Length: 74
Length: 563
Image (cartoon, rainbow over all chains, first blue to last red; front, side, top):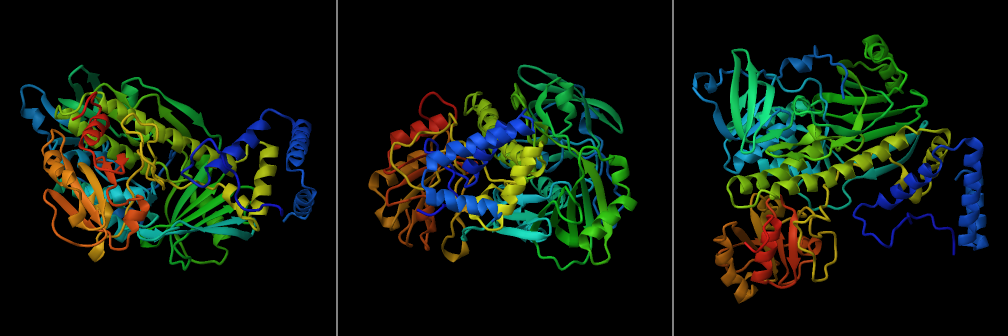
């Protein structure tokens, strides 16, 4: 399965009427998770988060594509 | 909110000044009691006065000034507001004078990263958004208020308020001195600073954002299209955001983010503003400043919008950041929600607690607006280094990827609130597809011969019954239409048929020639919707059932039992 680049944030427990709501919920969660952290603590949080999510995805072909895209900024 | 105004522009000159007249109370021996008094003749107060008047209530409207707003202030009017203004009888002048736009472009540094189109679907009477200076809207509303018989009183400033159990007493200051007036119901729409809210000692809670923005309304002959342009960190204004909107009469709104440390007095001087605009236009074109202001904003609301016989609406009750155009647009929805409830309670046809649901439903709406506008503000003005890193990463990815575009937040444009959890709703017992759940505002649809469904709705409770042919409406339904029309709270029956046919007794027949209404409402032959006077869905079923309908009507009007 290739890396999914389509909008994919969703919440199975809740009906959404606006197409941005679930993504905005995620973005707020992400920014809030860094609240009160200094730069080093934020970097650690990001590292742990990437590792947790990477294991959840698991599929190395997907992870390779994501790493490449993140690396070249596209 | 605006910290300063500059009103000496050519565009200020033609704006009407309204005549003060000596109020009749000066000749009276005892204070006159009026069914409805509205305080504040801004867009929301005027709408409240018109709507109450259209519902048969005599209305006095008090305003401390005698002119429409200075500067353009409110700017974008969303489709739902246009539908409400249509119901009030001022939609046409607003739409013909206003600038219709659907396309928004978003830039990061010097590059356009994506564009959006507000009109994802056609077949609506009104466009996604219309831009119009606030003073025009107010002027049209004043015309309409006069035409429907609102008692407009300019230069009438409320200086004291005394809420009593069965009325509210006001002391009003005028050029002729002070007089007392009594209101059975008082609608307060006197803006973000709300003098009446202060007189009552009521709080409004929320957060103040540590940022300043410069608004410049500029007159120029520009060939930019009528679109919303939003820049993150552009070369001509590094590190900040800029927003450009077109208004009527070749007036353009430019909104520069300045940061918290900016000096508001220095920033609004022409010698500071003009170079900023020159840098943005970049081509030496001529322009003239119409209005300049530096503002900060807050996202906050009152704990309750109803205090006995005092009902707060618009900015007096709740305030948001301007990103998303959720200020005036939510104020119109307040009025839409309030007027029919006030009518029923004032007439003794619904219990007093129906007015509590005004506060409940509109607080849910205010919370949704505050949430969205706070998120937009947090995206536009990142509050920490890491938050800026994520924001910029989203913007970079947005140039290529749809998922990231969805995360870019320069304002989630005003959409009407769906009162999903309202106590007035009757829960679905049948299965429906689509978004028209109980609590949702009715969807528009084209009818035969250029008509629109939205124009047939509103002002009273209505039942929509879907049928392939008007002749196929079930007999029990036809028999019940006469009963519904004679209830203490009458319900008008509307048959929405796929094709024209015979007349139906005690019902209006609308022809859904393109089938759009059937699609948007998931309406099959026999499907029934109960629509509130504010055009929101109260209940829906797959089969007509008089008992269920009367129970739903009772619930939607705050009764314990059927009506």
